[in-house]
Image (cartoon, rainbow, N blue to C red; front, side, top):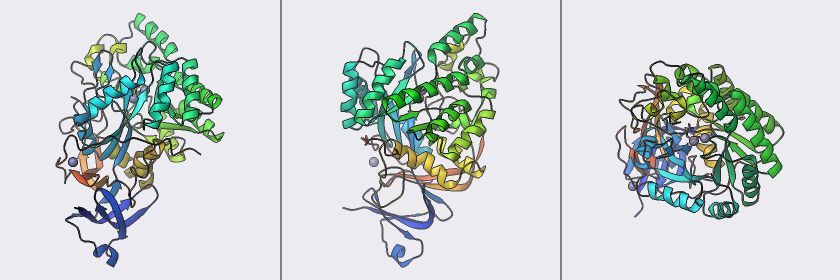
Length: 467
Ligand code: URP
Ligand code: ZN
Ligand code: ZN
Ligand code: ZN
């Protein structure tokens, strides 16, 4: 039996268009769009009609960088796939791509199976996986081919965290050479972790133990150096490169230069780098620990360069790097030693709203909002046009967005499983009202109407963003 929904009277905003149109949804997919008030649209009948007058009708957000339940520093990120995907839905995100982890000494397959087991049956929205490669060897390289074939088409490597996730330049080059052959995309955590560890040791020896020193030792220059090195290694391998969580303006400059040379080099930044700064890391009474993540927050002057990069397409994607740790009992592990503070910030629920605020504030256009938060992440990671747009044939992942509603972000009202908000007290204009995932109502006029297990695994094709 077919089920039909019509969304009437909204402004449909995609990466390419803004049109006053009604949207017909049939059996979980977008069936048609027609200009509102025209006979074509009026002729549609449906079991359910949603009035979107005065609202935006936008594609569900695609957050290509989350870490539900990530093991880190002796603890686990506090959102499970159940709580984290529910919070994502509240914030207008309908697809996440999370990072499965290969532990050293284990296969990629073992890591991927473990992440499937965590996610399956628990997600409110659709999900896919990248693979963190921590142990590059002949077996791992062969496994990369198999993973690409089955829809895990992107692999994260770390130039940071020696002894944990770290790969040396030779391992990175080998993985890049493999991805040049199999179509995979290497995602790079670009920080010179070997040099940073020296600076950490020296800072602690001087008694510099507060959270703010996390930002001082993880220098912008060491992000830029690693970004430059990753670009050159990718160039040697003939592989595309996607640099994750870019925070330093010097790293943006490296990406811009490489792109001017015509290389397939891409950059992602995150809301925390656009809206927060080292001022937050310096908050007294260990409050700064709430803002410890890597790459670290930077001084405010970096923000303008990140916004500029997003406007000029030197940066293509805004993801959250959602990796929450509670202040009580988790961030507190690093009292007296900033290097023991688990790295990561919550944000999966806030991304679409914060980027809408950036539209209100004039940093980006409405269409660019959808491009960097929905369409490009879907393209970059092989899910377009199923995800990331509103067009006939696409999954009916749709958000009704009220651009005039006012809200104040707070841990008291958010849905992420974490005891603080990195944006506590921030006033925003705009709010998610209703969310559909494959035609099913997940949020209905600010009530949760979804369920764990609705979200299905989304295998992905290779990158659709190459020049
Ligand atoms: O601090 C962060 N970003 N934590 C998550 C792991 C990573 O490097 O993305
Ligand atoms: Zn990282
Ligand atoms: Zn991350
Ligand atoms: Zn369902």
